[in-house]
Length: 515
Image (cartoon, rainbow, N blue to C red):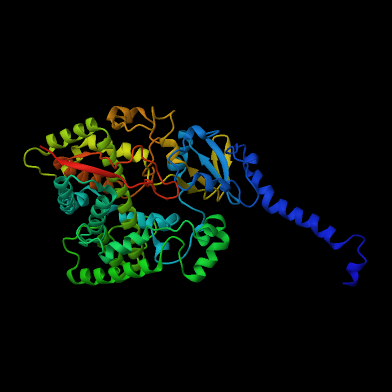
């Protein structure tokens, strides 16, 4: 204290420049990273600490009005808090990121964002590097053509229940909430194809399986802890891991599915899983390798590491949540657009009837021939991709055209903006299935349509999801004409605060029996 008394200036005058220098070093200087790379900013000036994410309260989580025309460049820099994010929409660069230099862009997030709370941290969607490669290779056989052929009978049965549920509205001529019906259909179908379990939520919406599954998708974006994780992952990570809590998953959901898995594993240990063709059985077969050391299960490329029980539980939950939303949301939007354009609906119905014939048999081969209904689905996924942004992180410094992306930088591919880019899509806000004819697809760049991602780390369940959608829609259109009603909201507006595309008001439609 005595020494301080003899300072030629007050201590405050000494500390202020030091604090200002520290603030500049840690909160201002990092904002110049993109200038050093030769990459332009996103047109929004970054602020210390909050970066450019202060715009989120204005734009929301999922923003349907956002388009690539708002981009200042096909390569731009932005900041999530103090974390730099490289936004890339240039097709040549996307090919480098997703395919040519995939080895440098394997992971979806930085390691500091990985919350090591099991079982969720063992989901293939969250895994990194060789660990991801090992589990992905093990799971891939579950989505082969032979497995899909065996699953279609279960899917068809769920679609029959959907048709039966819709019938009451055809009789009363009342409107119905489309998402309620497609959600129940998707829940039943996903429970069968993933877990091999009959839930029948279409008749029993309060089934415990259904209730807990819905909880798994209910993210609280208003939670301070959620935003702490998003803005400052390095601070949030040890907190969540100490609490053994994941920011995106509830503990009661984990406990419920863990108990369900115990029951299913016990049953299948008794019957050996004979005749089972669901995803769970593929994982169980791989899990058996770790128990008995056998090599009869799926062969794993790369590092040999059979699935643990936590792997089985985590990926059962992960695939269930991913498949449920993909099918239910996409199907509801497709039905909306078919109701809005009767000519398109008639064309889809005509194709279905010609393929199915008088017998009405909807097998795997018939579904594969339904090109027009697939075009309708693909156009729906263009307008309403389940994931607005695709993320990748550099493992090492990566050279892209004129600039170098430093190690551990987040790369954002704005799929939603690309899907609405008028330079790629003529009249991008219109529903035009003909964009996806064979001829049009061959003319278009492969990186203009990204609802399932692309490259080695694309959506593993894409083929199953498309098949489920085609079966459900075909069964509905074979039996009913979908129409709008007086309570159908037109034009439809999306809730920008939901993480998935969600209408502000429920989609309500009517049906009539097809003559």
